[in-house]
Length: 404
Image 1 (cartoon, rainbow, N blue to C red):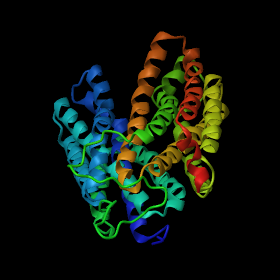
Image 2 (image 1 turned 45 degrees about the vertical axis):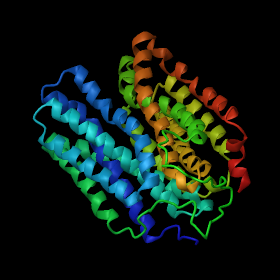
Image 3 (image 1 turned 90 degrees about the vertical axis):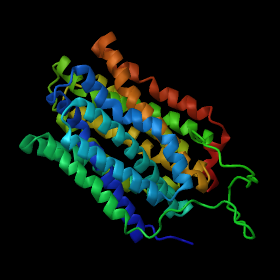
Image 4 (image 1 turned 90 degrees about the horizontal axis):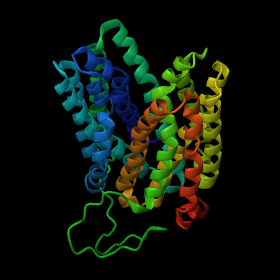
């Protein structure tokens, strides 16, 4: 049955998506400073800062399997409850041990929500609209990433850390409220119905299952996509962590605070403008254009001397990592059957989490071990590597969008 691209259920899931992204993004720029304020050492501060993503990475395979076995509503509700509990932990935390526990709980909740919301959204879309629909989904993510940190920092500066964490708690509770009104609960897709087997175009042959369903950690078909988004995320996340230090060490006359808001605004415009092309153009077109954009962004940052160069770098980075994050996610779901989109999403997010973890780590190694002027030139290697992954991925990935 053909679905309305902007049905009530889809709008509600998009709204919940904004809230699930806003809650942890509000906490992220504040949590290390808060941990220090209650007596933590510098080592613990860094550990706390990366703990949520690490925990989320480890939990994603389980979340992906749950998304394919339980209703998306139920797993999203579990995730939202965990995120709410984590925010309560931040608000009441008397010491760093409670913050560590809250970060672990937050990572579990974030893994459940991120995998299930994307899968839930994709299952409501017709196959020919997955690219554009997930582009809108990605726009809501970008909006949460742009708005929430600004709100959090503003509230913290006026009222303190715990007041800011109350806003994050509000966002988490809002997820629970919003998803109650979604009629389509995202029940698991039945690949085989006795007496009425549905044949889906381009689906894998249905195999007889005589035993219990096995737990799969990743979808092998989606692994090339996970590697590609990891390579795009490494320069972005290294920049996210070290741009301020990079500019300060070189005494560059730039206003670093303008970089990421500009990135977010450009990304939202690009995703909305290109949303229909996501369903029409083959994957290789986006890969090539995004590789060129990210290479230009890295080169501009390497030679940055003023705000104009910095702003141009943010624009090209939005055309690189920003666009590929949407394209890779929609492609991952097309590579998997509808009944395995939860696992496909979790595999995609494993690549994204690895990029978010490796980016700061590689950035730290480059910053501590090389001349600062070599920081960005070394990161240029990621884009040729993304091309190598694509060329070795096999014909299925190269033909995917040409078959439409």
